[in-house]
Amino acid sequence: MSELQDDIQSSELPDALGRLFLKAESAMELRNWSYAISLLQAILVKEPGFLPGRRALRLSAVKNNEGKKGMKMGTEAIKVMRLQSGVKKDPLGVMAELEKEVLAVDPYNAAANELLYEAAAAAGLPMTGGFALETVIEGDPDNLKFYHKLGDFYVDRGALDQAAVTYGKICEKDRTDLTASKKYKDATAQASIKSQKWDGEGDWRDRLKDKDASKELESKGRAAMTPDMLRVQAEQLAAEYANDQNNIDITKRLATTYEELEEFETALSFYEWAFHLSNNDPALEKKCAKLREMVTAAHLESLRKFIEENPDHPDVAIYQAQLDEAKATELQLLISESQERVDRNPTDNELRFELGSRLFDAGKYRDSIQHLQQAKRSPSLRIKVMNMLGQCYERMGMTDLAATQFEDAIKELTGMDEIKKDLLYNLGLLYHKLENPAKYMEALKQIYAVDYGYRDVAARVEGSYEG
Image (cartoon, rainbow, N blue to C red; front, side):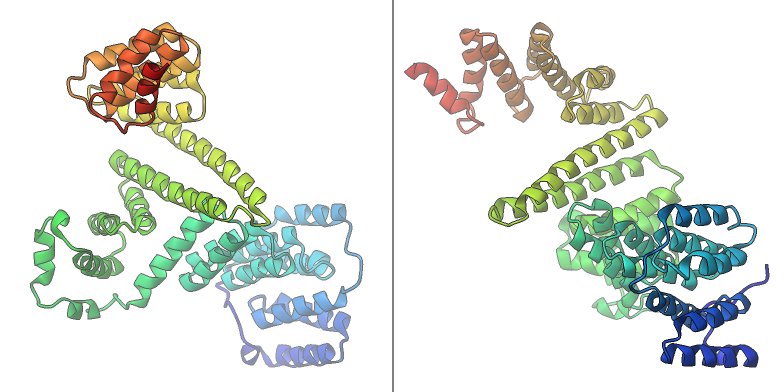
């Protein structure tokens, strides 16, 4: 297929087609929509990249079908399905057939416009494809699937500002759409970098107070760097990144700098790109997973705070349901991601512990145990694992096994750190449940002796004396 010109203007049409377009415009002025449709369809067969003509065709179809009953859903679906098989072989033919068979009588048809998008992409007419997505949204402003596709389209075309606006609209419509929230932040960050004109010799150099400032910043430890210093470093690295976006070292340093700035969503976008460049480096995969979980948790926390601070909001029950659903969905996604990482690296005990912990959070204690038992082989994880194993056994009613895990872990700890306090607390509650008041108090008093404010220990211990 010869290369097609996308977004042809009326002034670029051959004389014969130009005259035909003038007739179509006249027909539209006279509100003779059906005649305008036939003329515009004929033009687009010859010049499928004539986007103004396609816009006029869609407007004419909308006007021509106002107040009319649409096609039967079965008829629409059959015609679209019949055309799907021809997208790769004859995308231009599919586009022409869609305009004639479906979009002329049902211009906002989602399936037909989605197929038009795919056919236009196959034909090398991306602007026409983008118009197809815009059409669906115009006809169905709540169709978030097409908002996502349109946002991704803008990102692929480098229209980051438009992408950010599109993803932002999704977030307005659905506060729990974590994917849209992340993409909105990523597009905004990338648009900001692009707007700074960091693609030449660079004004960023002028932002440094002297020529050696860059090297000085690199030589200092990040722990000693102020936010302003980190910001300058981020700008310097962004300039280098703009010149070579496939440089994994620069990408990782930029991600780390944004992480130090606590701009975690932006950091995540660069870590994910670094992971892609690294051919699936396990260390970068873990970093991405950690930040992704942090970003998601922050989003869910903001929604929780909104609900807490606005108890009388008319939609608070809806938001609460969305929050509960989002939490459950996110946890399931985290479990799936962890399982995939374990499948790729079955001997990695940290990944086993991560998967076991997430299964525990989901209440899948039996599934959690098998991964925790393997993770227990790691000396650095051993105590944490034993604490969680004890809780799994306790939840499953195997109290003797639970007590053994807690007590063995406590014996291995000499100092009274947070982990030991947690173990003693869990052991105490277990013995309280087993109606063994002596061992119950023995465990909690050890905490009481060093940390009066730990959870409800003081109330429990002091209450035992009062009783």
